[in-house]
View 1 (tube, rainbow, N blue to C red):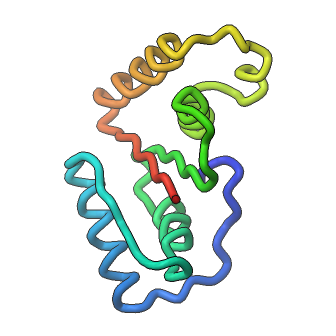
View 2: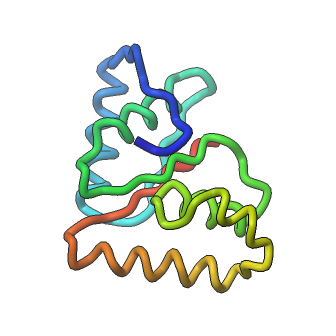
Amino acid sequence: MTRGSTPLRFEYASASHARAREELLAAIHARGGPIVLTAPFGMGKTTLCRALVQGIDRRIVTSLVLEPVPSFDELLKTMLVDFGVMAREDLAGAPHLTRALLASTLNTFLESLGPLKAAAVVLIDE
């Protein structure tokens, strides 16, 4: 489970939710690249994302971004924390970290997943 996310206690899996979930899981397992899921406000996209994160294969690390991030650097930091690469406290205590260093750290982590037959998924809500 992604750090900071709350466990789902209830989920109504309608036919359209189940279909969306299956399509998202198939795309994640195919490792095909970016996927966009759109639906009107209140249709359960966030709940679907949370359920997906909780039910995903353990060899897939996830970053679930539920709040808008003010910058690309903050998105990189969020992913590094969610993937367990860096602690939020370490990032807060190191304001000198450059975008290049953050990106390089993320890239090194992502490359390390290959030999493990693991993958990383970032879900951005909103």
